[in-house]
Image 1 (spheres, rainbow, N blue to C red):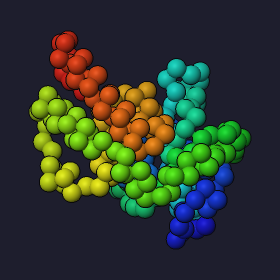
Image 2: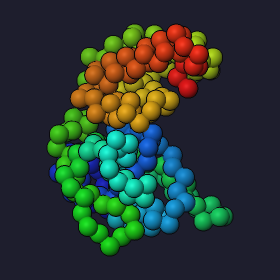
Image 3: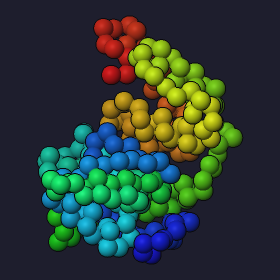
Amino acid sequence: MGMNAVYRGPEDCPSVIPVFPLPGALLLPRGQIPLNIFEPRYLAMVDEALKGERIIGMVQPDADGDGSSHFPKLYHVGCAGRLTQFAETGDGRYLITLVGVARFRIAEEVSASTLYRQCRVDFTPYRDDFVARAGENEVDRLGVVKALRDFVEAADVRVDWKGIEEAPNEALVNALCMMSPFGVREKQALLEAQDLKTRAEVLIALTEIELARGTNGSETPLQ
């Protein structure tokens, strides 16, 4: 679709996309993730993305799967992001920002001559991702804010409460999920949650589990 593409549904998205395996990196629809690109294969991936659809699929390596550190097995669900900001550094790195478009399920990895990996993906299971603020009214906002308050108190961090009060439910839930200090499996659970309501419930549950773990043990909560 090119530089000024508007992705309104699965039919607007490319069926084969480059994927960037990165553990702990969670991208959700309409969320933003800054990335520091320095490996040659991913510099090449960004170069190609800039020439075409500007779409890159963020996907986590499956820690329980087979594969090598260079070619890890991937989780089956990721999120496509549109490359919206790009800057070069003086030492050969790219600083980019992706904005989440929609989640996808990997149908298969395609053999490609590129240095980076490419997958054939299906966006249709996540058609609602293309609709901004879908399901916001079902979110337990009070529960989300309470979990955040408990975390802030336990971890002694500063939070922009005014910004949180003003944020719509989708932006609030997705931003908190993306910023959360959970591990790969927990981040994947947040990604694969069926809808915004379920994602908020998973976020609350994970936060409560981590807080309890920190309270009952010697660990610092959510570290």
